[in-house]
Image (cartoon, rainbow, N blue to C red):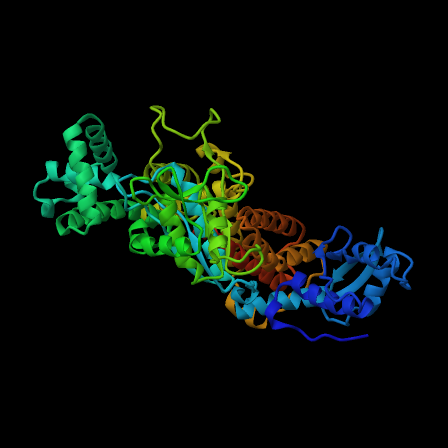
Length: 586
């Protein structure tokens, strides 16, 4: 029987480590089938199970094999499995499933190592090394509204998970800062403020209202409309006066966006439409030189197989459009990355055009790879797009402020876990912000992003069930248990030992060790709700453990305090990846 040494690359990732063991076993069992990949899943009758036996049998049964069926293949896989400190036992179930029970001693040692070396040693290793995550993408001169909520939150979480997994991430904000609408905005600015140097955010006031007024005048005043159209030509031609006015409008908008990003603690690098504008002509020329661009009804287009309508890259008036800019953005990033994640309504035709140009490979498994990260709508009680009573879209900054205000009001009504300590005004404000914004984020992220969800402050701020409030409270409760022990937890981490003798201790330990594979799955599927589900179940496993196992004052106090600490550390990392600020007192 072979022996395999520990692999530090997969520290704290039992699924990956078992896959390496079974990879050896597969090669020894069926040496003539070298391309079979280990199929390891969490088990029903063990901690994990290997599901290769049935698939292998269907491949080898007509080739004069020595095996008599899937169970025999499973038994052979067990026999060829290298000896490992990770595995306590293996058994066969049903038509050949190989059940694996992990060693409790090894599980405990893995958690002890994490407590000493840090949670980053549990970060998964992904095949992608560099990625651009394109998210949020509001339009200049328009306020961010609830429609930007999902893109911003989901994009930030995907970026955080990839960054934790040692991927170099370029966070891109593809803002709408270029186009014909700037002609009317600039001309309206000139009318209201002839001295544009003195224009301030306060002077303009509500930028959204400024946009609406300029649009109304554009629609009703032919003379103003003509001026606005000429302004576009001057802006795109590089006229310094018009460029300066454009820059002023962009600056005011960015200041408004910053208020939202600061509240959400989201970091982005702006690369708007104007950034790609100088490259568009060359990109269109490259596409034309490859014979991909054709004339159609006065416009220049790319025909995509399987789609009736072509992709218009130059309009009939000679101007560029969104497709021109997006193709140029795709051209730009395709030479810089392994993965590109963004939300775009016509992603299929865009990606097909990029493949025809040779910027992307023909298959979806080779890098550079482009993934469309779609998501459902935020709905109101009427099951329609979430709006105000006056049917206006909800300003995102107002939504965030209300979440904080409601959270603060709720916190002020209840005592904290530390019953002898009242909230200080600063504590109350900081905690209300963490809970309010965290509740908003978690309610969005816990839903599969492909489906919509109904927005409800009452549900998201509920302190029971699968909510951020419940999870933040659970974390604060664990911290309180550790504090009340009076023990120096840092010292215990250095010298203490963990034992997983009780069933609830073992179940909690196993769930802790499944953190890395959960992050890996969430990154691979681009589904943050996978991590949310893990976090909620972690809190449930801890509750079962705490209900069954006395911590403070027990004979097993050191071991159980270390399990508390490990749970708190993993919860904090989950919070970080979801963009939620943990609280220690609630």
